[in-house]
Image 1: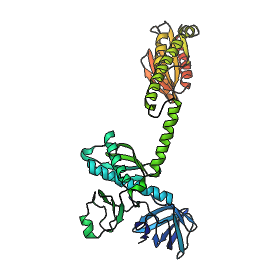
Image 2 (image 1 turned 135 degrees about the vertical axis):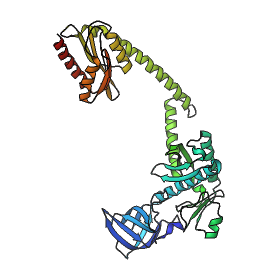
Image 3 (image 1 turned 60 degrees about the horizontal axis):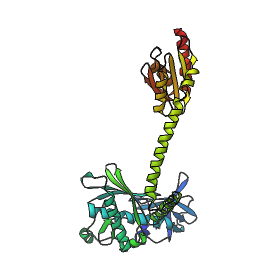
Image 4 (image 1 turned 45 degrees about the horizontal axis):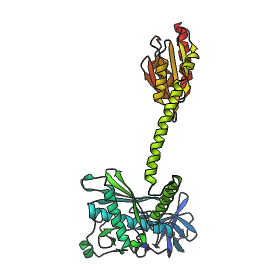
Length: 402
């Protein structure tokens, strides 16, 4: 068993140990020490990083009570080595883990939620909670209530205690949930109303978190997932939001408090401007109809082919083709760029016998596109080459009909 020094002192950042084993694995080395202050990945909390002598610690894992350190350089068996913990990373994880306990405790006390999992990533921390009656969402007011409860504990700087109780004491403790292990049970208590089994690292008091901010609450795999930030992460998030809000407010010549209504007003103006622009574009598009009819390509048999790409959305393109084929003897094969793809509308006058649905389908599919429709009107999408293929197909068809 590796003596885990962080159990007794989560603030220990330097220690000395003896190398018990070291062997190569892939491009790294696995090192076993007689004692270690490095926290191994467990309970949703990531591993510590730092150095062991001249080697960088890349990962830390525990197996059968042995703490294995993944390092980038070999260490000699039997050598004494100094370990140094990356304190910034350790403190961040201590703050996130304590924040998890406090949110979980508040959810349990105030709403009956049972936390079933913690995950601390490099940017956001999350906990999954089984709520009464399978609830997977709570209101903004309920979120605020949980958040204020946690930060009230922080303001009161309630103590955080970590210890290994004797069996009799353990049996009498008011734990939030039953321990997942039966031996060597470590308890973490935060103030007077949060107590649970946990092997993670934690600060000495809630005040060291500074701030906890709940970012979101959403369904996840049938449970309720709470995303949050604690400590320095929460402060950094506030600073980013503060800068973004005040920059946006300045751009809109308003205050932070006036930003939301200013953005709403801007959205309304933008919506009206887009409506007006689309109307003007459609008027300009439909004004081209006489010129398109005049420049139509005559086909064998008397029909006229109008083809090309225009600047229009799908609805306007459909209307354009509909207006073109009101004239007798017209076949209109038109396309328009919309987003990352090209849409097509093919139509023909009532006195023309070409099958537009078949034409579009047979020209689009070989080129990775799709489409189809009635004999007189079809719609689809795909690459720009479809139009040229359709025009050539139609010319050959018309030659055969002549």
